Length: 481
Image 1 (spheres, helix red, strand yellow):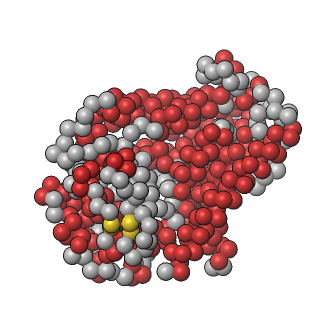
Image 2 (cartoon, rainbow, N blue to C red):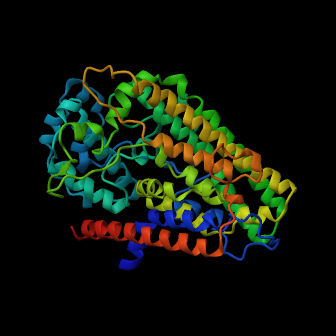
Image 3 (cartoon, one colour):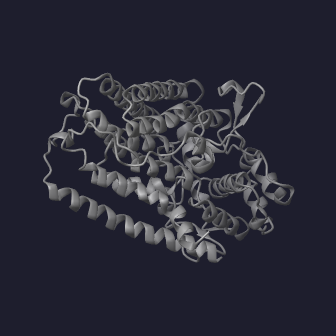
């Protein structure tokens, strides 16, 4: 594989930003009046989804069969990671980590091994950092963890910090594999930090949402193919599948309260999945965490958040839900946390035939009715997400954290962003009366001048060029090492 091909694979998450920005003006003027199918090439064949993008109908973006332990050579990592909750309770994580040998990460073989290694090292790192709460935050992550963690992250194209990938996409296993029923009674996490069964429940709900999302991701491919072929019947069928899958995602999301209390999330889970950008670091006068053997300067990395999943960006790209310039920075940060294959899927969908443009040319049709139902379903999901954030983050944040360790918490800075995503979803609907109350006009009624699209696209490309440069620089350094 050439260097340029490797570079494209590693930087693909950032491409999402420019795709989201450059599509903003293309739809703002309403229907283009075109009834012909899109001239753009359809996404891909269903049969290539798993191999090319890591997407399956049964599990969505989640791994089909995550590893529950690493090969024998990596037994020292297994011994710590698989016993983290007990080690956290006894406050012995740091003793164990500081006695770890520096293992050769190049002995990892399959993709599943590299993915599991990232998860194991992410959990070990979080436990090392947060074992003693805010007051005990270390300045340095030992070389035996830092060096392989950074290298594995470079190989996968994701940050050397805990992400949604580690908590949900690869952190699950069957209780009874023969049943293959993706429900809480038949699932459990591979690793747990400090929150016990409630922590498991929190992340397993994400796994169940991923499973419900699978049919929608496949239907996106079918819908774009239908647009390419000009087949209204197949497009309508695909849109019905997408709507149904999103509503099932909401149904699973609503189960969060069945096994998780706001107190446990606020006091134990949220603090221990925070990254080195957490307020607790700044309160201690630290600008980040030094990765021994990797960098003499502290690294500032965000922690894990379900907001960085690839599901909603895929739906946004497919349905033409455009986001404002103020959201671009956030989208770029979140894209960096997506596995390369998943970000490539979002980018491919954004490049594929425009479902929205095609539907706009069919006013009053069943196709348009079902398209709007899809938008309403996505809005419904985002509405409920806001309710969850309010219940589990906003309200508890007004109370002191109750824990045997002192934690500051993670704050609520993503709430405004989530509201913006929800409002943008509402604006995407053709019914002007559904627009959120605001002094700003809906994108469909702003009447951009033709030149504005070029300006927006240029700004977007420049912003992404900077992000691409920095990401490529990091990838080059990790490969050189």
